[in-house]
Length: 225
Length: 348
Image (tube, rainbow over all chains, first blue to last red; front, side):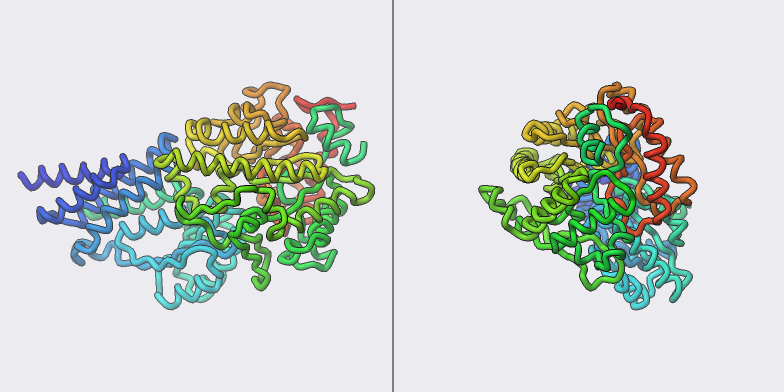
């Protein structure tokens, strides 16, 4: 019972530390999780990720904007860095063993949305192959083939660079039709995602958080069942 | 009226014969580039090619005005941040800034911004502007454009550092933005001295997709006010993305007009700003000129006019690989529906 109560306290600390972008608070709570022998994966999913889920809602309600999102993400990353090395393989189970190739397409040097999505994939236990920004199109295809990743996530912030995405999708789907393609960035709409043959999209950093949070939330639901 | 007279009169809110077709953002099409037998990657470094690409586009489609340059990297490049031109890349790519300052400590700006006008491609832009201004007896309206202080800052330093600094390191970020404002003013005054007909300040990284209205008021507005107060020719305040929450502040900065994209509810903006405010916008250039069937374009343009814009501007640079018939439909629709007075601009 004492353990349950302490677990709840630390999850709350992690959750609120992320929402209030208090890096020291998150750092201390994450260390307490380890020191007191509590489950690291539980702390990531039900503390840090749950906090980020609320951040996504606050963005949606226009209480938080991108500077706050970035500061919350920094706080989350601090906790993730402490807790992640202590995740036990049996905690992740079959639900998240995936790999993802991620990058911003050639001609675009904006990577905020990409970095947030990358972080959320890491939270969910994915192995992330980050190609960075201004990435030549063929590099996505090469990396997907090399790593056999199930997901390729492409980001473009400008209409003028979005066009490269269509080409990457065609090249990847031609070689491996089962690969799931996620598109992100301000100019990407559901119409564009459909037209390009993508499997999912997010139009902004905040929207990307929400999309990723949905993914994480489903994962948490499955695990809690 | 000549195209130039039409553009200038509209921006001064004087009566025009009909609504001019022009933009304050990059307007160059693949049809013009191909007709001139150029490669897109080459038009950014040669003044004659840059000017001809803009002029040919205007003449092919009967635009009233033109703007150069086409990319956002000329000033960062002149500040020593380099440029990626993608000369070997397949397809169309706009130049980008390859290296940005990663922290406030790394910022290294010249004491005197006049010195940048001899650096990088700044002389190319100057020469291109002169060619545009002198073309065919100065027939076309010619615009210059500069990124706004915050967006310019995001071109020379990492945007996440800037955005977090705007919340956590207000004093130093404020001082940096003050210097960026000096830079924007220096460039705008320089283009004004060259004789351009208007300036568009594109503070496009500051919509409420990114920043809160409160941050816009405290961090963006004072700098924009300083820019608009420094320039004597017509000057426009353009922001793309979400602007409904800040449209009144945008209009209150001292610009001669505001320009918004398709995310703005122009009907509501017109109600908020009243009939005297010059509003430009607000169609989605990619959706309208690249994706849509040409037969649907007229409806989009007519809606912009019916909603209350004074000139139909795209929300951003147009993607050069437009459908020819869509651009023709856009121009035809402005000519057809732009004969009646708009809220802020009468008709002769």
